[in-house]
Figure 1 (tube, rainbow, N blue to C red):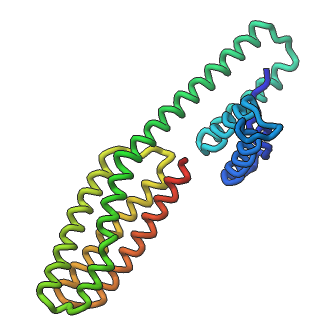
Figure 2 (cartoon, rainbow, N blue to C red; figure 1 turned 180 degrees about the horizontal axis):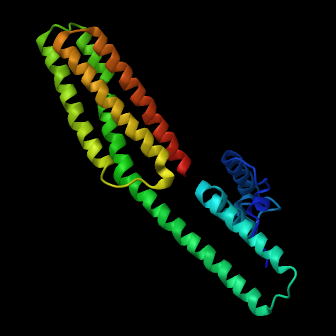
Figure 3 (cartoon, rainbow, N blue to C red; figure 1 turned 90 degrees about the vertical axis):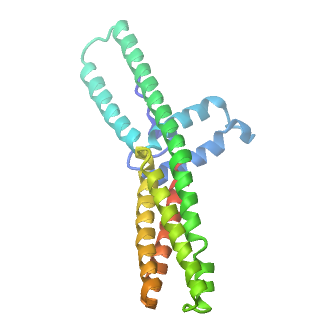
Length: 241
């Protein structure tokens, strides 16, 4: 029995980048999908393609697969000079089946963790961040009519107080559950997004004390950076799928 070559299945080299792995999978999945109505389509081939991408599409599992494959090849080379019994071959088959069963169980557990984290952490935090970011333009526009108007300034200060409350809620939700390893990019962007928001709120609060426009402009810029980080997090979430 030979070790499955997922690189051959996806028609790529071992030096392929993760982007090339994804492109190859999409191309072959479209070509061989049973519903594609193409002559080459079929359940057997698409199953092999899916199994290959399940391993190579995840950088951590790909690294482990590469190590296991090298170990397997070394073992095969060592065993070429000796006679392999039917019992040995059967045991190796069982070992390989057990290995893939364990890997699938780990992947399923990881997927469950990611789904739970996205629902219970990322989603709520993203909505709270939106509540902070979205009103800023209208708040600045209203205040610009007359920054020295007590009522307008009071409204702006209330908005900043609300931002503080929403930010505290977002931080608490963010720290309520460890992020999955394969969602590290999403979590990092959220973390820096929240930090930029905190700094931006502080700058705009300083403006309400001394009416120095530089604090207001700095706060707006920090909010703009936060918005970019939020979009980057959304993009990373899309890549998880």
